[in-house]
Image (cartoon, one colour):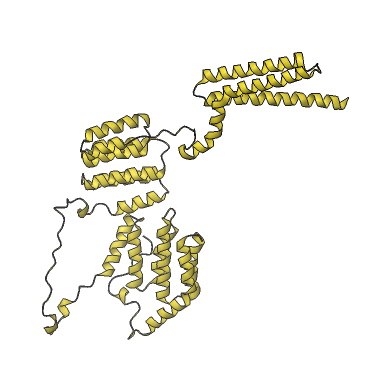
Length: 412
């Protein structure tokens, strides 16, 4: 009794699964079909033939033992199969050929729609800027948030049409759209700053563009780079046109230098590194993220004042600052290791500095170079020690501090 019930349940389950599979196949075929009415007709015709064959089998063949009836049933089943093949032959061939077709066509999936800018680029190259802008606007009507199209439009407006206000409006619209990656915002505002400098010769507007970048995407590498640019905007060379910029004249040198008794006047004038250091400190008070100035200050602290501690402080400030580009951090760690080696620091001190490069990301090429340098570090330190031991004379270590050039504060 239990086995009979289990058989009934299993039979019902198989029928439900089979019916569900047929329904899924029909729906999937309808969704992917280009001619749905024809496909529906083929399904109905097939269902009629299979249903008719099942009815004939149960009505005339299932309950008889006649060989002739059985033969006729087999013939009828073969004829029905042949008719089904005729109805579905094209679909069967398509199913078999589809994997091979997909190898060359990429499959039957619909391609993702993308903007088309080749016509606009062709019009730009022909000097037809109004037509290029018209083509761009057609594409941007369909893809209003496309970054490439908006930047291309702003480029034509600024560089070709010299219409800086229109370019500003385009960049403003791009920056006001939600969902753009920080890299795209940075590219747009850096481009606008470039156009303000090169075309409008307006460093104030360029500075505002970069300040907006810092406000829109703070705490990013792009914000740090923008702050670096802000620190160097405003010099007269940035606003002069190429024809008005300062010209450097090469003065003819002394022709009979070997015959001169006194050649002291030919020596280059030494730079006042103390004043330069003070200028850097003053500059860093206004622009603390100017890494170029801070790095130069660190070198002056070491070279001029012989103060490794002050140089280290400046480099560590940049290394510890978040969102600094990895390549610059590696550069500063290598520079710190150089200064430590030149100052006579011990093996462990220099090795620890180089190990920090490896710890940041052991898979980077910079980490591999640091490993190689650590392997040769003892030889490097011996060479530095030998170069220090052959120096002639003894000099006051704090002589740079006694020339009226006090070392600036360690923090700027």
